[in-house]
Length: 270
Image (cartoon, rainbow, N blue to C red):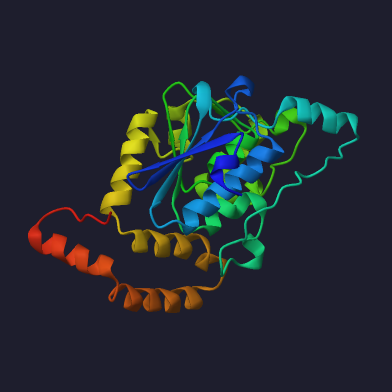
């Protein structure tokens, strides 16, 4: 699925960064089946394109994503909880993705490209899930963040009960899930869910710096080590890290890093 056919997401690439924008501002970027498919394809293109080193996902019109489309939720409730999946093709999982990670919402963790969520306005429900599956999260001061599941009679959806405690700790995860209280950026940062309180322009500048000054090869290997290798045992992860190091020593990025070190300058990997 080519990005030119997208109707609910836009993708703009410059300076090594793909800005993926959830683009249903009239519905406050409410999550839909088509948006989910387009998002996965956008991440697939970021994984396979050499000119994309970092992804920044954000929302159009002042909100990140208010959650699943309320009209769709009403229809599901009226149909006794049944729903039909979107009938669009999906991209393949990256080679080597463990079977346990081959889950739709975990796709961002399986790709080799770092994904950064730039949160503004409302971030709730399905939007919270999308942001939680990003590698890093930065939020603007005026944002409003909530899990929302408990207020809708829903469980911690799509693996949140497993992933969220690993990001913020069990007590903080339980507080966020049980109460579904609305958090601002500062409160979310204190809990550890958000890595910084800043505007979109600052997050984009951070992503551009990451794309230019951190080795793309290093980012690729580190992301796999953190999210994929940790699904196995320590011994296997350690052995693979040694293999990674030996491979990196022969990679052009290592030469650039050494040249920058000798020249007392920042490396430039773009």
